[in-house]
Length: 139
Image (tube, rainbow, N blue to C red; front, side):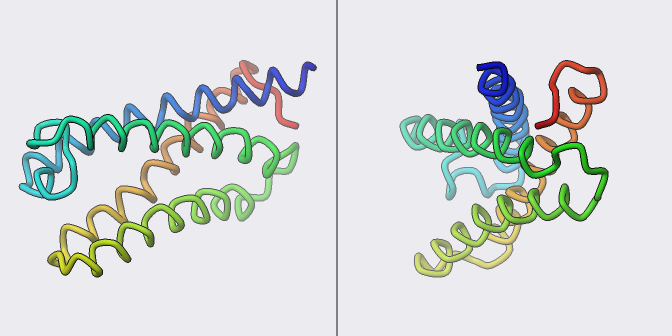
């Protein structure tokens, strides 16, 4: 039961970090002009923003649970970066595929791919910070 609780805590921390990062990126995207095309909270479709935020929260939660198991007590930086890269690329390449299918300009879609990588990198850093402070225990 203790391991499950630690996993839920890890997932909640990562979900919070990804949602906050996503909101910051939404503000930046709205300033760059990419937000209206891709569902910014400042765009015309608030439903899309709610769905996007929920997807980011679920993805962040799953990343947090998985990241805790990936890193264990190992200090190997390749495990950490590999987990971040795996989650970031899955989300980012899906957005790239959709953007190409919808014939969107390449630069805004590229921004979203980079955003996806940064979302999970931030979550990984926050989880490492929480583990260093003994708020979370590695698996």
